[in-house]
Amino acid sequence: MSLTSHLQELKKKHQNLATTVEEMQRSPGVDDLHVAALKKQKLRIKEEISRLSAEAS
Image 1 (cartoon, rainbow, N blue to C red):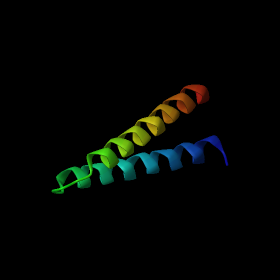
Image 2 (cartoon, one colour; image 1 turned 45 degrees about the vertical axis):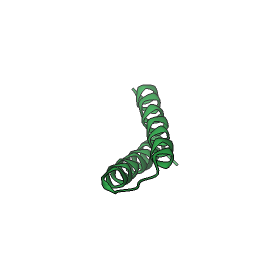
Image 3 (cartoon, rainbow, N blue to C red; image 1 turned 135 degrees about the vertical axis):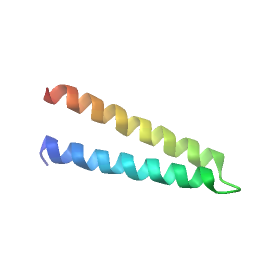
Image 4 (cartoon, rainbow, N blue to C red; image 1 turned 90 degrees about the vertical axis):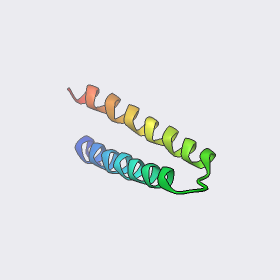
């Protein structure tokens, strides 16, 4: 997998997580621990995107 395609996949995952977190936070009775775990996963992906983008520059 090329770096570009890997970055695109990570960006898709990040956007999907962002959408999921937003939807969950609007729902009543949401599991806060699950939302927190998704936010951490989203942050790790964002950091990986930043790191790979910096390496590509």
